[in-house]
Image (cartoon, rainbow, N blue to C red; front, side):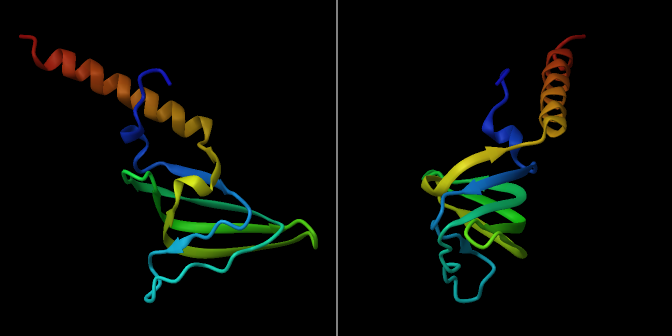
Length: 120
């Protein structure tokens, strides 16, 4: 990925497709219960990447979940807030091309600046 590391994506908006039936854990919920499993559904969450732990679970904030029931073709959207997504439940991760270009350009400026700082 052109020298871009995972750390560079912190703060980016990600769109993650979740495997059918895989639970999300709503970190904002007071009882920390899992969200009900959904069968025959396409589940996509969008939110800001906050952290990735060693498991690696992905922690997103300001999450909105989009659900499409394939059997009834019913679509719903709900706000979840802070969510932990287990790595094994992730089917796909997407980032807009615009945001990726911003990350690459930011990294280039940082590298250029670092090279200039040591020079007199």
